Image (cartoon, rainbow, N blue to C red; front, side, top):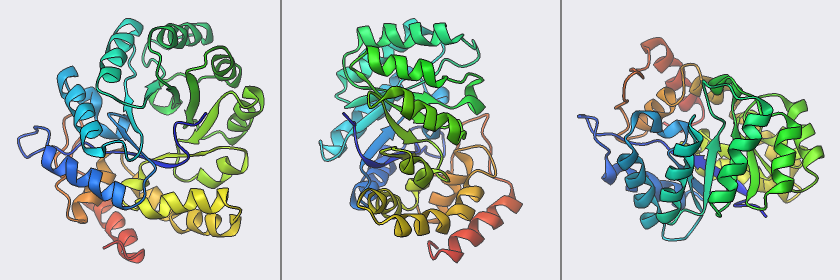
Length: 294
């Protein structure tokens, strides 16, 4: 069963000028997402800069999101890491905050084998009973969950329910869906591949772009699911150039700048992320103006 169908936002974490978590602005961002029709909120994923946050900060953000969302839509917490024992411990703590599911990236840097990946997620699934969404993003982790491994995990563990597929390889996504045989839902992890993945049997997207246009990302998915394929494709194509601008520098630098341009207090990044280059800011502004976002 899906944790959600539609568009889940990979939410940014706003910081104050002195780099503390800005809870007032976080609440404002959550309200913007809910009013815009977002179908799920993902906190402490890649876009939320969790690797620069302490464990207590991450738990605080997770707890705050659960409290403010008040059960209106699912709240999903990113709890992945490259030490299995730590991932299990932190996932249990996230569960205690009341999240609906976990988003768990493949262990990075260690570069585990396929057997190692299976054992990593197996131990987590046995220890933490809430739904788990695998997260495959080889460009960041150096590790690719092969379709056979993903499908096996979905079939053998009831609480491994989905995968966020950000490999960029449409053939691989098709193979995951084929081999999983309905035991594993698939979310697009790339904003430029939402409709193609839906066409293969995906059920939605975990989106960076949704930070800026939650309503249109929700509609893109549901137009497709309701049989209005041409309208969904139109929205997909409409935002291709903006998606390119949002990834002209490493995520979440551009999306935090875009939100800042929209009036949100999201300017501050934590090192080693740095301010967006001026030439790229101009490109981003031009795309946002073209689409009447600014």
